[in-house]
Length: 309
Image (cartoon, rainbow, N blue to C red; front, side):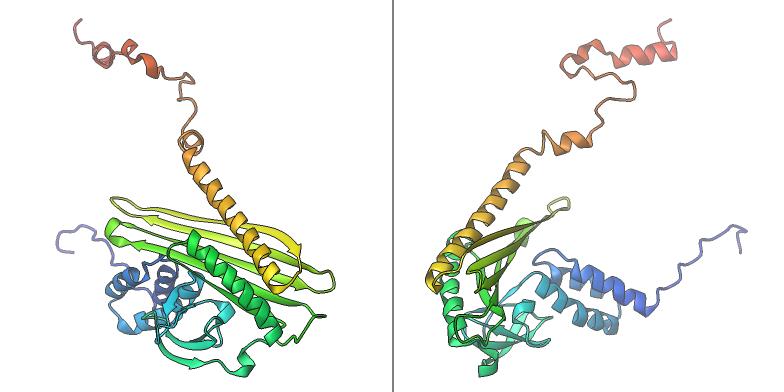
């Protein structure tokens, strides 16, 4: 080398496969409502449209289903939740309330086409009676509890049952989001409730999972990702009575979980933050915060440096 010194070696460029996996990781782990911002940065950093398109094609469907994003139907007759429970194939999603199938562009997050559901895709009249009753009660609950919330009820097993005497299962999906990037914050609520209608035992078993995500990024980066699971059960009754009972239980568990989150945040200064601090300094002596005047930094420095002698 000209100056005889050592120059740092240039880092070897990553293989395309590794770039692809890294890009997919960042996209799928983007906070609620922020995947398009992350995608823009990923595209810029990669500098390779081919790798970006491959990553986006794989990552966006995963992200959309994980975050239960809600898209407006092309005819504005309602919304469709992007969830595995309504997924017919990679691009087509069933909306049980309107009995329609929406074709979805995952990367643009829009519905591009709409068609009526076929008879094979729809549940029997007996199942639909239970599903409709529950959907109506849930709509009232979600409308009151989540100003920007959407819900749907899917039959996940036994959709061809024609009458009493057989078991069937539902999945209740609730999705609510509040995106306010201009105020440096975004958040989402997602809950999935699996209902097992057991005819012989005349009971409905309820298993729920609630997820809360929040991101604050004004002069910093603070994220919340919390979840909770619970179980319950109720007596199997008429469709209307079952709907009221199940919705009441869902509302109770969700309200209870939200209250517990609020309580834990109120106690953060006295619990979590306190536990993060060292209880005693290395001197094993508590610092007298109420009487700091007994310490003189000037005096100690003077003594150490021999000033004033």
